[in-house]
Length: 324
Ligand SMILES: [Zn+2]
Image 1 (cartoon, rainbow, N blue to C red):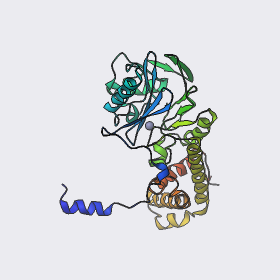
Image 2: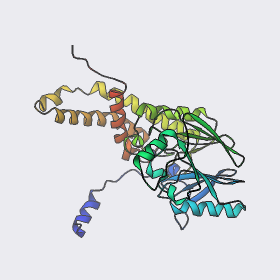
Image 3: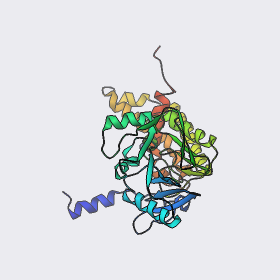
Image 4: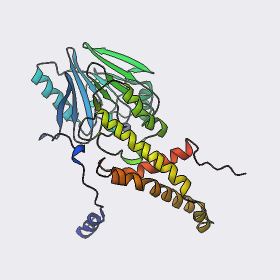
C-alpha cells in the first residue's frame, strides 16, 4: 500500500547524484521514443536512450544485431524508416545474437520464423535450457570464429572466452570500421551494478584490450545514448585499472582484527562489516577521480569495486592467508 504520505517519504529518501556530464549524452529520441542513425555506409544503430541494437541493409535484405525488448517494435520502425529512405529491402533475413541475455534479445520473436538466427554455441545451449519463447535459440552456431558473408557484406564473429556472460561475442564489421561488443564498456558512463552484472571478472577486465586489438573507429556497446570511440574504451580500461589498484591497496591496509574481536561469536557479521570496509576504502579515491568524467561514477563505482574486490581475492588469490 502506498499512501501519499509514504510516497513523499520515499521520494525524500532518494539520493541526489552528480550531474550527468554532457560528454555522456547522445542524440535526442523521436516522438516514438527511438533514434536511428548511420554508423558507416549501410550499417545503422538504433537506441531508446538506454539500449542499442544495430542493422545492416544489404542487397538481399536486412541483418539485425540484437533485439532488445525495450526498443521492441521500434526496431521494425527504424528498419522501415531507413529502408524506405534508401529504397532498399526492409525484409529482415538474419538476426545475430551478441549473447543470451533477455534484455538484449527479448524482442527476437517479433521477427518471423523464416529469419535465420545466428549465435555462439553456448548461446544456443543457454537459450534451449532457459526455454523463453521470446528468444528462439539460434539454429546456426559457431565455436570460436565465423565469417558471415550476407548480401555482399562481411561480418566477423568471434568468441574469445567468457566475460560479462559465458557466451558474449565480438562482432566486427571490417568494411564499416565498427565493433559491437555488448555489456562491457558503456561509452561515457560507469558500468552498472557489479561490473555490468558480469559473471567472469578476469574475462571482463581483459575484454577491452581484445576489443582495441581490432581495427575500428565506431564502438557499439549496447547501452546508453551514444556510440563510442577508442578513447571511450581506453577511459573505461583506465577506470577498471584504477579500481584494481585501489582494491589491492584497501585489502592490505584495512586490518580485519577488530572486526573479528567485536563479532567474535558471529563470523558472518565480521565478514559482512569487513567487506563493507574494504569496499568503502577501495571505492573512495575512484569515485573522487571519475565523478564528472564518467556519468554515474558516484552511483555505481561502489558496487563494481565490491565485485572486483571479491574477484581479486577469490579468482586471483590476492591477500590469501594460509594458516601456519
Ligand atoms: Zn548481458
